[in-house]
Length: 108
Image (tube, rainbow, N blue to C red):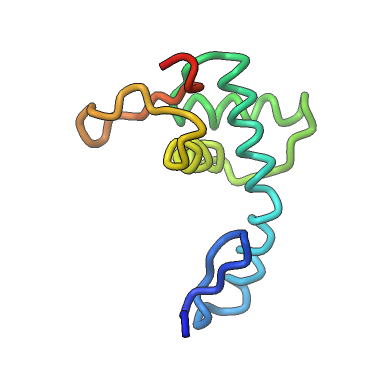
């Protein structure tokens, strides 16, 4: 039996407190919307760092009516999108600690 609960959204361990499950379920509601916003920002603005995505999301959120999300959520969604090959990292071989630059596949 797995100790991790997966429902298509965030993962929580069965032993996590109920507050973690509630928070995980709430964040799961915005993950896809934030990922879609990351793709839109990259299409509109071209390559961006994770920090730039976070800043742009905070500004554009009001204009486009995007959901409220944790400040660092766009950067995290960009990492997931890159892992799943929807977008690319333009500088994957840079030294550890160097911010990734994300772009649409067509740019790479």
